[in-house]
Image (cartoon, rainbow, N blue to C red; front, side, top):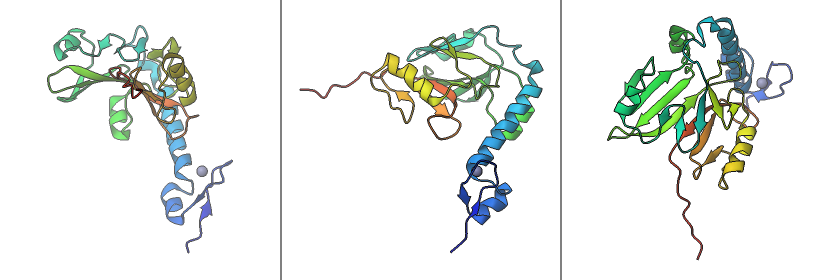
Length: 210
Ligand SMILES: [Zn+2]
């Protein structure tokens, strides 16, 4: 049997396989993710002078409806008429509007998503889903949800906002079909910050009663 070793991080007692330790420099995957996040946060802080140039106001996230000027049900033409730049057409189904300009080269190399809005189109070219990407608390703030800046929001905080507007909140997924909203996490765990919010059409609750 392979002897596990303890994660080298201070205050972490996770036991890891020697093969993992070799890949990560002796720390567990959770600590590695955290270290990468902190490193990127530091990068954002040091390079944020070019940031904030594009945004002049927050984009409010309205569950089941819209993110700032982007509205579910809009056609591709209507969204392009908003004239929000820069615009990156990834494919027919997805267009990205990066709302802050940190350093595109760095973002591409590291694979980190840029804070912004992802617009998803169906085959008829109608927007059926919107995703606000904002990452973590040190990213340039771009979005608000029910009046609160989303950067650094914890999953449990979003759940309590959702519970105040909907009765079908799935707390593990931070998701309410009837309100038309789902949050995405950077790491597992409800007490971790969320990094994105998806807005989708409100689902009618089907009644099985009677
Ligand atoms: Zn660890």
